[in-house]
Length: 429
Figure 1 (cartoon, rainbow, N blue to C red):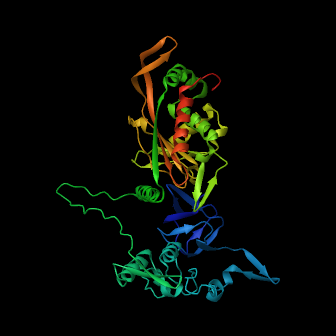
Figure 2: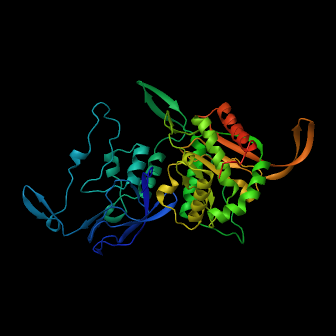
Figure 3: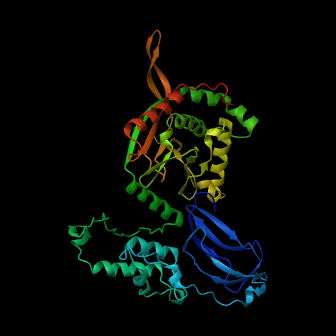
């Protein structure tokens, strides 16, 4: 599924239990972050069992289905046909070990021969501190009595209702402490009026909403704004764009030019190119630039230019154009939207003067590019100051205050502006 992808959601099955399957037939479809993919069968045979259904979240490495083939396995020199084998029963005693030192801590939730739990249900149980025995008591309404997401969420509602709402008691070092749970912010009730239209969020919109809310909750966002004079860049691009199109067969926009100098600034300040894992800061070796692309549906996707520091301006231009085109045509591969270490979004495309973005986790920073405008400006010359018309833009640098302080965040934005203002197109192409 691509580097950095740890789970996917099954969106459709194209084969049912009992169906014959040819090698390379599409078996099911999955969705990672924002990309849909078809998963082909690696063998020919008959689909005997499915362990996950539509909307289940599957981790990389999980067994999704069993396909019966004509292959024969040998054990103790005795040929055994897979078709002749019976149901395999996993001994629960071998799959769940009790923590002797901390007997009160919930053990890992496991499926057994009598009951299967999806990864999503296991995840919820782990986060809410539901033990194996407690989960086993929940009445399931899914297939074969399986506990669904709704079952465990309903159980949690009833479970929380049995605890006093005003205060909870916890034990810490054999002492009891009283604490009040943090109240969740409440949103106002929507009042529907005549003519209002209800639009259900599509899957991508839901994912974007979840990721943006999670990012704001985990990262203290700080913004720095710098104005840059890009007159030299504008004049240079206007001069070479027609010849560039004839020679390279590509249109050169401002985005790859800005990315080129952002990458140079990242080399100067490598601690911008980091990620946070718990209490650890991971300094990334590769510079992989995510670029936000608006889709025809109105949604947003962020394909990644891998090893952007190894590309020339021509190479960056081709990469930007290729990824943007394939993103809008829903042709990206899962690994092309993962692995980013720094993100760039060009809000100037929509005529916006400036914008403050939301960090793409687990990255710690992104830069929003404002529109380029003709502005009256003071020009310093050996003969004195003059008033002239200059092409100017605002760079908005958003960073995670857990890893980046104001000095680093501000100096980085300033360095990008310095590179843009000192632009010399000689030797770039």
